[in-house]
Amino acid sequence: MSRPTRVSDLSRRDREEVTRIDKAPLAPLPPPLDDPAALPAFSSLSDQARERYDGALDGTIALNLPVPSGPDEERTLVARFLAGLDKLFERENNWMFLEPLVLTMEHCAKCQTCSEACHVFEAAGGEDIYRPTFRAEILRRLYFKHVRTGGLLAAWHHGDITVNWPLVARLAELSYRCNLCRRCAQACPLGADNGLVTHELRKLFSQEMGIAPKELHDNGSMLQLRAGSSTGMTPAVVRDNVEFIDEDIGEKTGLEVKTPWDVEGADVLLVHNAGEIMAWPENPGAFAVILNAAGISWTMSSELAGYDSINYGLWYDDAQFARVAIRHAEAARRLKVKKIVLGECGHAHKALMVVADRVLSGDLDIPRESCLTLFRDIVASGRLKLDPSRNDFPVTLHDPCNVVRLMGVVEPQREILRAICPQFREMAPRGVDNYCCGGGSGFAIMSGHNFRDWRLQVAGRKKVEQVLEAFADCLDPSIPKYICAPCSNCKGQFRDALEYFGLWRDHRILYGGLAELIVNAMTDVKPGFIEWEWH
Amino acid sequence: MATIVLNGRTYAVDEDGFLEDPTIWNREVAEDLATTEGINGLNEDQWKVVAYLREYYLQAGMAPMIRKLCKETGFKLAQIYEMFPSGPAKGACKVAGLPKPTGCV
Image (cartoon, rainbow over all chains, first blue to last red; front, side, top):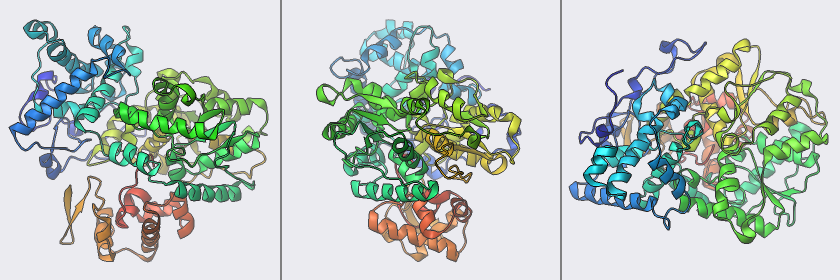
């Protein structure tokens, strides 16, 4: 490797990248992807893109930052950044995360335990800018120099930093090179949370400067607040689509499938990530089959946002987060349901079940449950007739970071798989020590320029390695294999990675949710619910 | 906003190569956009997919469910990937002049 990248490199006024990850040697992968020359090429940014957008960092672009018109605009942007920096450390402006942020700023022994825990740092062959501590070090120097106004003494003690537009722009891009999986935070012996640092930086950029990926903001949370779903589905379109799913799944299973809508007083309001309805309809279809067969009193809501658990604000903007979380709770309150059950979507779990605790009060504080514990209870109750021999193929389990590491929901999904999948095998490491799929924090839906190469070759590399190791004994394409990934965002990443590396085409590795495996084992259902076709 | 030149004509597209203005779409534009998918001349099957996407989009203001697309056109998803290597959303929708599908799809 060339000389280490330094914090000061990010303030360079030239418009060159501080490193070129598209040209760097990445960590080796196990067979059959062990020949680097046979892997898909990491495409380079076009000259047009490099000229048009600022924040040259590593050879890819997430944000499309326009080049300021001149020194005046640069100064204005830097001033807004510094004003936002102050707000991050004020109680009245950061009631969500002030305490852990200050703790992280004040206490870091720079031991690099977190770097060793980071899949992005490892996959990139130890590239310095991807260290969780690198991002935190920049924010720490800014904190001591500009928030605590420590002057020369702080510069000597904590390291100096030059604040200019190039630094701000590169730091904005750098805040979109972390999956927010918080494996680093779990590894820290002192309890510093460098994942939170990424989150707080994204928040500063969005809330103070209007800088956010358009996939998450314009086409994400803004569209959701306007149309009802980040997919663009209005209440009328979602009803029509789910009716189609009911018919389709009815034909496939031989059962009558009916999704109840807007049932007042139901026990359960089920909220899916609406992407499931659009891209993986067999998942919401399987939910309907299971809940009906188990005799659960449930409903879906056609209120604006009541049918889409997505809350992208979780990843980049507390205000957008709160707006959407309140919509979700309001939909449940209006229907007077006993609880909200979240479908197979990791970030929606964290958003509504954990972080929304800071937002929802009074009669909006409606109980929330994970579908994984509900499924475990249903399977354990014996209410479904299940035949594990219908699932007699190799199955491995992906642990969505937000559900597993963050919330500690580790065993329920495993109890189910042990009961219904005779060839279930774990990945290593697993559970709360899992690795992110590589699509976390919104990356799974970001693919502008060559960002898709970055998220599949770098962010997703460790997970591909884990999958290949879990199936090392059965890579033969005559054996169909299933990655159970109970999370929409993770499924999007698996779909792209399996296609990119040819692992479905050459080795018949497929992916899907947990509900599908349960229905595939139900004896009341026509055999072959899982179709082993690319989806 | 970026521009792309296809068969001598210039189009304004987003970072993923989708048309910035879906209303300028016509059959010639579709043929031009198809070249970005490595398709020189759309065949009858590919037109069937494109026509369905376009019709649905004009009605609903968004792309259809992938499963609906398969059922209505009679093609399996694998066949659609054969016709449009980047898949139904990033490939076929692009050729049909739709905006890039949004959300976790």
